[in-house]
Length: 358
Image 1 (cartoon, rainbow, N blue to C red):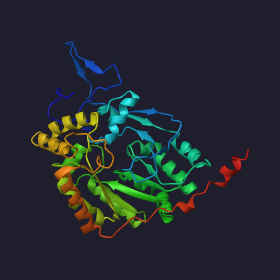
Image 2: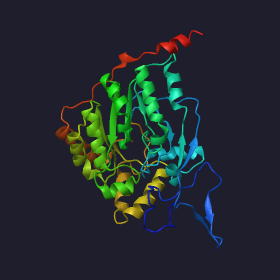
Image 3: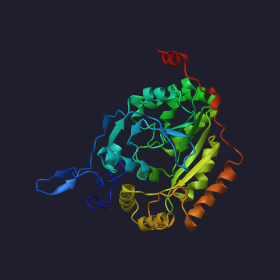
Image 4: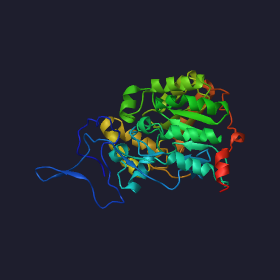
């Protein structure tokens, strides 16, 4: 379903411009106009928050494309509004849409810190790095109020369990005190996501994120405090931001980055609808070219679920992007590397051990 009811002006503060139909829902929210015509409700959408109480908060990571052992996500949905976000496809399972709903109907998991502590206290727990925000950004705007990520980091530090954090929000600096303690024991890696240095593109592509300049300053502060950082140049969108790879990695290196990661955009499920609609509105002159190049990177399809290929793509365009990334890393980062995680600090606090005797 392609959106055909708005003008060529992007919705302020939103990445998605409409709500694609939820395949699991038989109903659709619309506005009934006086003329009796139904039109989708998208403009001036407020952000709503819901409490969700899962039974567990840590998931084992089985994908060969993801380096860490576990993932944990205190939030579902994300106000950042990144139009390309693969996590949009999880929102329909909760009765919402992958479009503007994903950015405005946010679920919080208030028990996340307690569930994490419960998991780490189990005798069966096998120590390994936990990725915080493998799905949605753990430092999205809601974190400023609810502090779920901060409380989870406190738990991880208490137990001495390592963690990886990826974010594009400078709010992470609020937790510098905890991160410094974790870094002193080699318990944390931070990846700062930078998709573009072009502020005009950033405002359209990731409307509620902080600027690239602020992200670089955030990386510099973390690095100067001894917290190991890297840059995630993801996703690379051919014909849109692919030419920026060298400049992003050079800027990140100057800010203290020790490593760099990259993925090529893939538009699975409803994300293909959301992104296609967005780019035809934001960049109508190059929309078809960009979409065709994305498809060329994924065997002719906008989406890609194949392990080991879905992140890096295939074909000539994908190969050129990978070469540009590899050469840029070699030129600007050289032999820099992240320090390895130290798994030897893990301890179940004595109070937890004593309680287990009763």
